[in-house]
Length: 184
Image (tube, rainbow, N blue to C red; front, side, top):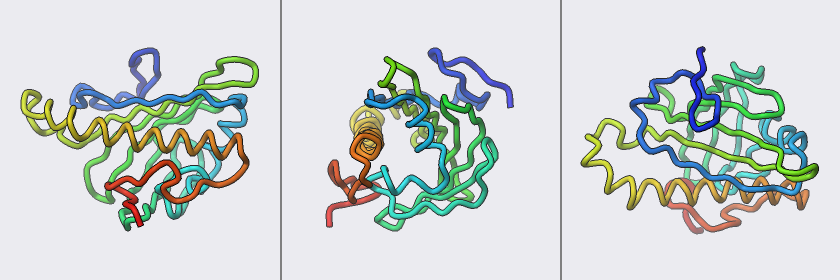
């Protein structure tokens, strides 16, 4: 798959012109890139740091052809198919309901200092993409972007927690999320 450059980030040549307004979140973690890479590139580790993930069955784990599922606490199941794999840097994947539309997600690790690194997750959401731009702007700004940012912030906080504290996150540790893990 050919790659294109998006704001300094190598991303697969998806039809990204159809994806308006990606949502990105980053966080600096007190760990070297190798430690972060070890966690995010190991199969089945999502429940250790993802506060909305109940389980993470793996079907194939071989770099760019990896496939797994994210089983959320509210019963939603999303399939992930990895399309690009950059050792010690990150990966790109598609995520969505089996047989449905998919969003594109890129994970990137950047060294900040000797023992500090930044993790960034960028999501090109499929939601609202078929709606005309003038109409989708308001729901994107009012609902989609804030909810997606809150979700991503919880994931990167969970990754930070797991790496720096050495303990798995608890369900909804950084707050519940109506899309995937509502309050008890």
